[in-house]
Image (cartoon, rainbow, N blue to C red; front, side, top):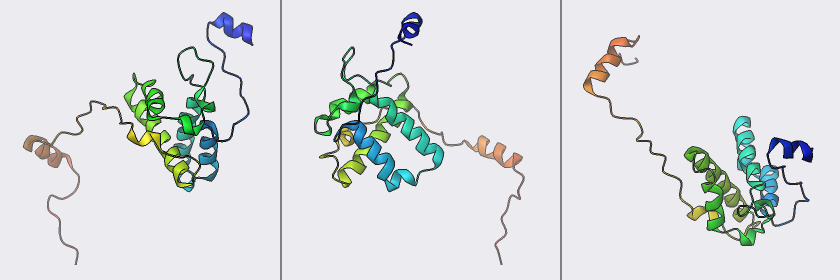
Length: 159
């Protein structure tokens, strides 16, 4: 398989190691198995959140480093480390914000259950996405909408 990966020109995935207690991956697995907030999410949301968090495990702590975020002790995870994980998705701001949101939820759970000593993610801001939101309708747009709706223009009070 390594020869195939070399021929393809892609880096092989790091080998899975045992989950060290008190590490980032350990806290995530605790979150998946014990968090009521996580378990109450819609199944699709749970699946996506899990994929987002698991994608952080194999991120090297620095380019070319043999150390990965999955093995970092929780006492060593700083706001700077969380910012690095967020910023690795900068070209996709909504993905960066989703990653940050998921990390915040894990640390919120970890601090509440006393698995993590502090929440380094709470001080990391979301990326501004450039969306101006929805504009306020003009009178012409309201009239256009009213001309196309299928319900009566006046509402009769219920008796």
